[in-house]
Length: 182
Image (tube, rainbow, N blue to C red; front, side, top):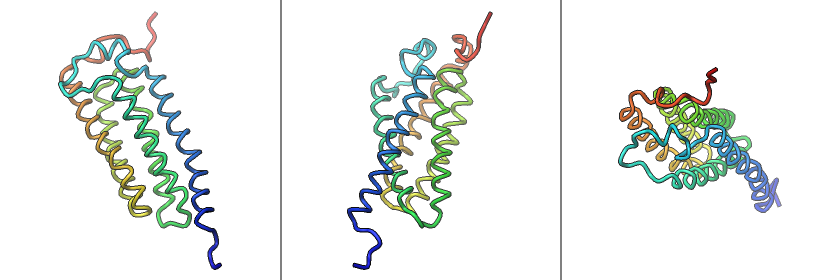
């Protein structure tokens, strides 16, 4: 036997990473959504004019849960790829995009900053695309797993843009929850 670790041991090591990354990413996404009061239950959001392609509310929760799970599994693959060239950069980019992702909901739903949220999601789209390309170089499967996330971010960017276009005074529609008025 000239192997350092058996295939079973390698799978178990990946599973350990996944058991850490999946709950972490899903819970952080859920908390960001709850803190921001995301979705159709938000009075401000409910009052906005929506684009014709706006999906029903349940679609967002379903899609984001799946995306968070898949992106966390891809991240676990990269964490598991010890010794891979550019692994450190890939990890840093993933964590950076995750922070940007988690900031979008409070900026859009809580602060009502549609224009700033659009700039943020476009930046996020670029960072995730670069992250996916880097993941692809390290583990092809990990890069492919981020492609649905890239596609969804492109669609979400379009929705964000359309909401801004249809609602030029969106910030003033309802007082933002991040500000207090006495």
